[in-house]
Image 1 (cartoon, helix red, strand yellow):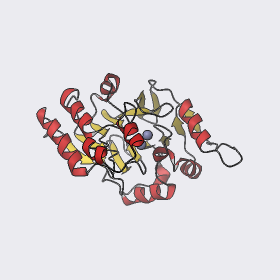
Image 2 (image 1 turned 30 degrees about the vertical axis):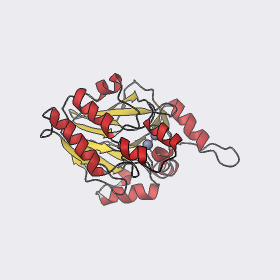
Image 3 (image 1 turned 90 degrees about the vertical axis):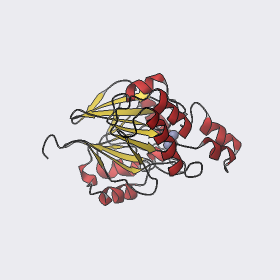
Length: 271
Ligand SMILES: [Zn+2]
Ligand SMILES: [Zn+2]
């Protein structure tokens, strides 16, 4: 491959039934989360013209099943390094024990620590802590060829530290999980509603709009709304709230707002 071919972001799946994305430079291709089956991951990669055999590594944000359900099979098939924090790895292997208590093994497990940058090929990765009810959940920023990609989903609110990490992103993938009113009157049991709404749950359209209005630097060429709830949100509501908030900053014309989908891969975003 030629150098300087740019950076791309491909949202393969997003939502509570499975999350998976690809961040790629000309020579490195990172799978971010493995929350859909191996077969479905390969199918969706092929649909956007990507060859699974060209993946360089898998990075995991946290151990919830919608981020790891395809991991064991993908890692076995692809034999590429899998990066996660020690605590996430512990929680993952504990959750995946078989009936005899035997934990799954990763052939090539690479440990990282939140807050400490590392390199995958020519992509510099910075994991950062997000407020969510998992063992050691992280978001990521990726830098290659002068382009920065920020990914932060599964967070109860946007702390100052997260805002600082996301600053300067050219592609910003952020959670727009639920409409508060839809969640409030929706079918979830109250305990689940409380969990989603909590400071370690998921980010509402309104909380994201608040971030766009007050804390966002208006830098991204593309804003991807991700991890939308199928029960408690609607893509057009999420889009309208995000665009309204971005417009208050005069940013609507700078930011192209895209919606990640649970059902199918988005066309790759290329920069
Ligand atoms: Zn989660
Ligand atoms: Zn999730």
